[in-house]
Length: 183
Image (cartoon, rainbow, N blue to C red):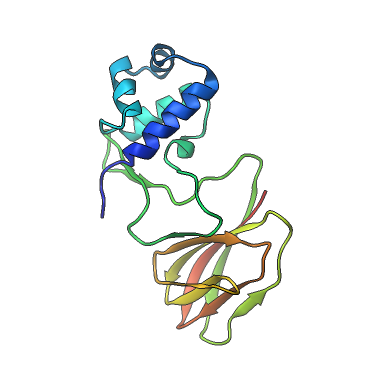
């Protein structure tokens, strides 16, 4: 497992949000309470930022913390167990792995799924803009777009358009967390 922060994503995000805010390096560093040299290093893709440093920068840039870690993603996303950007704290034995960030003004419904092997649960398209997120807890299952489902194993994450036909087919006894996001 990669234990380094996703520095290239963080660097691009910091530059993008600082430019959007129209702020100088000096002003962002001052607002965040970090050294200008630290911010400069992070924007150049070096350094090893802590959760606390990134949180302070997110507040200074008036953007959610997750946006600093989350690169643009395709409509269908797969994050396997052990993957995803990991950030470690310098104040505690603590790490945060971003799986999916919530866009502004979104509504999410969360479900626990229990499924047995068989033909699977086929779902017709939901309302336009719905995205479904699944984290498989146990078992094996084919999940996602009905015409191209993806096999998941415990710990895997998948996001796919819920406004298209989709399926959850257990290949063995399976449990999962499903988040239906309405944007």
